[in-house]
Length: 195
Image (tube, rainbow, N blue to C red; front, side, top):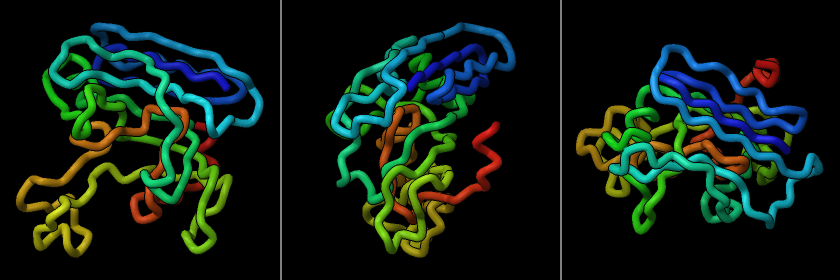
């Protein structure tokens, strides 16, 4: 599997793919970060380290490609293979050290809150199946839900204790593999895989 990233200016796209990495030129100009890695094109080894694009919030220009442990089943019932992520101004601000918060006890935050992935493993009653395309919901309800979080309206959180994937206290989707629970996955049309 090959994985590539190109980050230049306020918007970029990183893609993961078995055939070839898609490095999509960013819109705009500015500081650049480019990285790519190649691994075996065979089926993913679910026990081997995976690559992830991460930054240390508060540390300017700390973005780097890391080898991380494969996602643990405790992180979510769905195992998802990353296909494409979007890099926006929020990610650039995190990379430049001006924003973001790593998960508790960790120095790095895996970037990207915009994603497209393919389900690799799914429980039978989850409503998802291997091969299905999904995007991840960014915001997670706070652990002591306000009245909006308690009814699934996380974007209307009143107390600000929510978490956001790739932004605040929760890793994002810039990884070869990630996990999420079915309630945070949105199925999308297969035609998007050709994007």
